[in-house]
Amino acid sequence: MAFLQIIESWTEALVRICIGAGLFWIGSVESGGYGVFLEAVGTIFIAAGIGQIWAVEAAALRRLKRREP
Image 1 (spheres, rainbow, N blue to C red):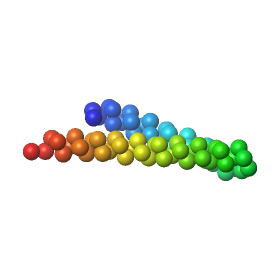
Image 2 (cartoon, rainbow, N blue to C red; image 1 turned 30 degrees about the horizontal axis):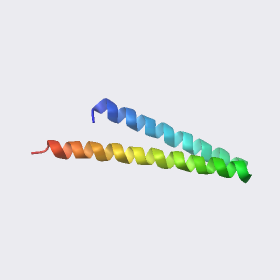
Image 3 (cartoon, helix red, strand yellow; image 1 turned 90 degrees about the horizontal axis):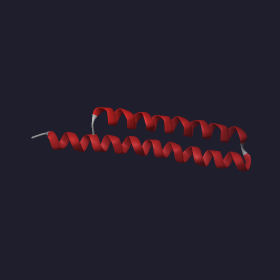
């Protein structure tokens, strides 16, 4: 991955995590049926962001290992 692609993917993942944290927080404040839904959606966003960061780092590590003699 090129440097700009890595930065873009990291930024996108961090935005996902922030959106997820916000949704989770709103859900915990609201509580009840709709609040539980927002907590679940927030958790999914957070997990997706963490997964994306993991995938980007794994791809970058594979690229570095391929370059080494």
